[in-house]
Image 1 (cartoon, rainbow, N blue to C red):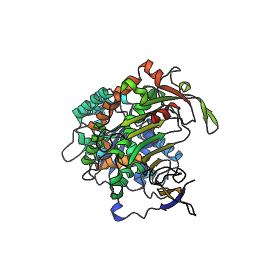
Image 2 (image 1 turned 90 degrees about the vertical axis):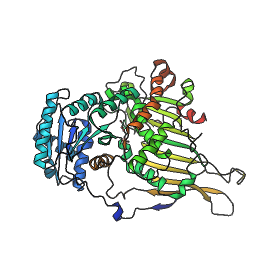
Image 3 (image 1 turned 180 degrees about the vertical axis):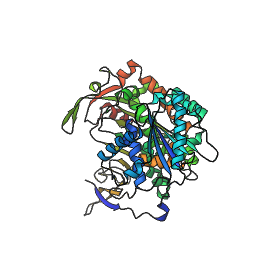
Image 4 (image 1 turned 90 degrees about the horizontal axis):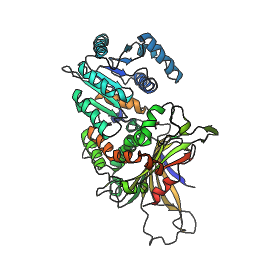
Length: 506
Ligand code: BG6
């Protein structure tokens, strides 16, 4: 049993925390507006930003997709889903007057010319100038065609004094080669400063707090290296299965879905060197340096470094849920992994020899995303008896979700006549006091409207992550290899036992 000795609350936001909404007018064009992402995340986030008065005064939203719809029908569909989600509808009418719809045939050049006309018309009506933010909320196989046609229709070029930006969400390619091809197509039409490769994980409040906590507190600085840290554990466990996404997930699997992006991004935040200034390019350069320093996997003894898993039928919250192979749209012989643990090393002076354990899985016993920084123990010569050192050495835990907190565990003397210890936690928790904290997609949108690329991925980082993982993915995907390293685990369990062995193989 651990005592919590200290818990803070946030002070009211100071002036320095005040956020001024973007002043530039803008038209937001959502490509793929009838899809799940637009309905569940993008439009609700825009509406919440509108409620919080965080959108520019002059803005409009143009939704496009293949579906034949008109603007009134588009608005009423969205109203329905936003109402269902329990949002405050008091300003919906005002918001919905800024929503438009235009059918777009993604492979047809003429359709993009019509889009250009619609953009000009709506920009005129809502005085949004020529600023445009394109959001690709599309299945990835359409990215290349749509980006090319946006370019050909003159929609990527920035008219004088105006900006055009594009948001591309993962999956950003499916391996190094396809990511590089996509980058080449993007950079034919857009400049790097116009491109926002987003990872919604980076916009989570607690993930942003990692850099704040590390670099705004001098006491951590001398401790943050191999000298005092024994290992780092990064895990993102989910209780959800693959939902309705078999088509995508069968091809992606957990390595592309979670590791190439979210997991490696978390690793970079924990491992990066302090930037000279907290500025976009300096921070992004420091992150890229971590990816460059990742030790390539030794494929000849890969089972020492990685264990893959796939969930089978099991009980979650007292209900039986199907195994991955029984999910609708999944091949009954599928070898796609839904779980992975890997041991990764960052080969630089700071981290030489310190293992980073990365674990992510679906249909796990509980939902939890956290990073554990495990410190080395004190010298054994100091407290000789094991009884005295009853509890483990210091550990710093960044709980990312569902709880949002930072905990430092340490030892303190147990009151009484005997010199022995008990574990104590020092805890900071955001719970119930997030003020006007933004949800991840809200933060992403605000940053893109402001042209702030701090949380978006630069081309070199994106490609370095693929360069690191592609050989591993290709090796794992050879059928014979997958059979060797894929272990089955029942839904609702902590994952395959083999994952533990990766940790023991120091
Ligand atoms: C997405 C993955 O990027 O992140 C999903 O495609 C995963 O498979 C999701 O469920 C997890 O994000 P969050 O914010 O729900 O933890």
